[in-house]
Image (cartoon, rainbow, N blue to C red; front, side, top):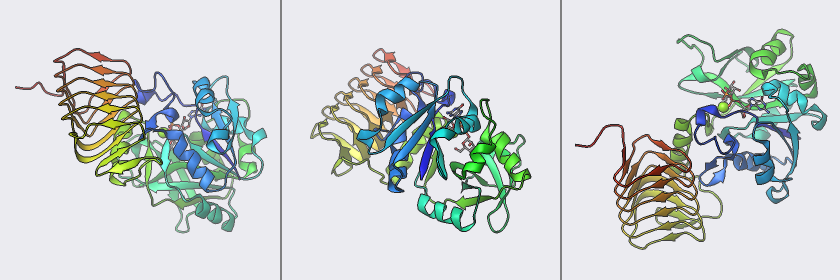
Length: 355
Ligand code: GDD
Ligand code: MG
């Protein structure tokens, strides 16, 4: 089966992290988000993946190449102007032969694509959408089904504050070619706002597959941070890490013997953690990071090349690529330092000033 990943969004809610790279290339536990989707598709036997993109396309080409090193073949479907989720899929039609899996490029999940495809065939569906139950559906596409799971109504991010439905579009679809052909060509079209409602009113058979496993839409800084915490909770360690107690380190990481780990810490290659550092809770530390003596890091994501000075405390925060935090600083809770940010010694970026 063919697959397509939607990668053309601007990722504006993830600024400043997405100023220097597109959202699907942001690291999750030190691996680009898109690599989890590629693994999922490979597990299902997909060999050819269409990358539907436009915004920051050169970043994808540089990082992903033709897919050889990822064990798949990538086809780039480039949009000069953003075509929207539907327009992007329609634009890739020449590369999609037969049924196609479509994934939103910012969803991290362990969808069972095999079971979803079996349901799609058993129901003889034109389209099947993976659904997931969430506590707050307001930021998603709400989906109403019959008892047997056939989709009856699709409501993208309705306004108002009472939502009778908790099942939402999980951003994973299976489409027959007639569905892709139904999307008007060459214009900006939203699959959620325009095409799904049209398919329903035109009598297409649109079925649902309820996903009960892990699911996260990494659309905001909060969800980016929270997804890291959840990956630690679920012990979803990236391949290639070695383990010593709560320390999960890649070859080439130097962690001083006196470093105390209360919880779990993923530490990337080339990173150096000095004497008497405390790593508390669930920390993810990228590659070539330096954490100096006596610092205390708690529930934080530190991206590649960042520097944390001595005796500094960072809590529940995100530290951008090559950001530099001086000595004796306090950062957090809930702070985000942009890539390359520089904090002089004794800075306090905190939600309330210390006494
Ligand atoms: N190629 C291309 N071109 N991709 C696009 C474009 C475009 O013009 N616009 C958006 N995308 C991609 C984004 O990069 C992302 O991977 C995906 O389409 C969905 O866009 P988001 O901006 O992340 O949408 P959302 O999270 O607000 O809502 C969508 O996802 C939810 C589940 O995560 C909708 O599909 C909702 O219905 C759904 O519940
Ligand atoms: Mg999204």
